[in-house]
Length: 227
View 1 (cartoon, rainbow, N blue to C red):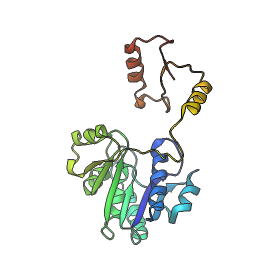
View 2 (tube, rainbow, N blue to C red):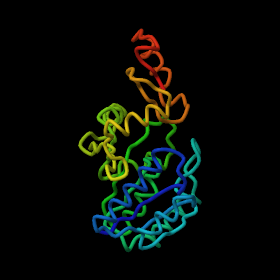
View 3 (cartoon, rainbow, N blue to C red):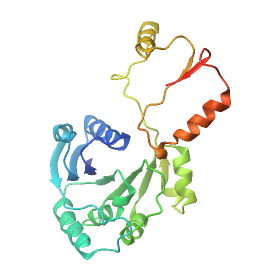
View 4 (tube, one colour):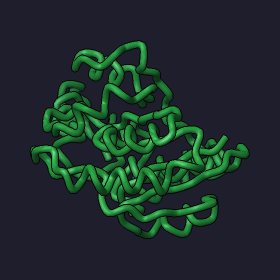
């Protein structure tokens, strides 16, 4: 199958970008032909280049937040769609805010449009979002909670499917007692119950909820550690 992957920046700002390049590499490893459309380069560019049959830099994927539908964005998207349209059987988006761009590309000529939902529902919708989102054929949510949030926001539940983020056990094998002890020692941990948070310090990550839950446990430092 020929898949047109649509990416914003090829830079690992967070899990969204890291997961997309992993998914792209996984699709290529399974024999699919990858074509990439992207707005800006970055340190993941070489990884994409190794698995892509073509890479096309496009000037824009959407208008600005809250901006009225710009004719220039429509023209640029249409021109990009004309250039990109031939190779793919499926257009794969990593962000629902790129739905309008994807809808133009996937209809010149017609092919399936799939969108990965990794972020909470946004209320800052542009006119192009409202035009593009109903034309997505299938949404992939990263959890049941994410799926339900989009259903509650009015998305068609029959288009929403769940695919949990996976772990490459070749890169991250299960630890044995020795490697687990070494990892705990490197973090200065003993044998107490430990919760490890890995991520950026950002309100959107729900850190306040984690701290409230941890406090509610009422465990002392000899019983448990939060790292």
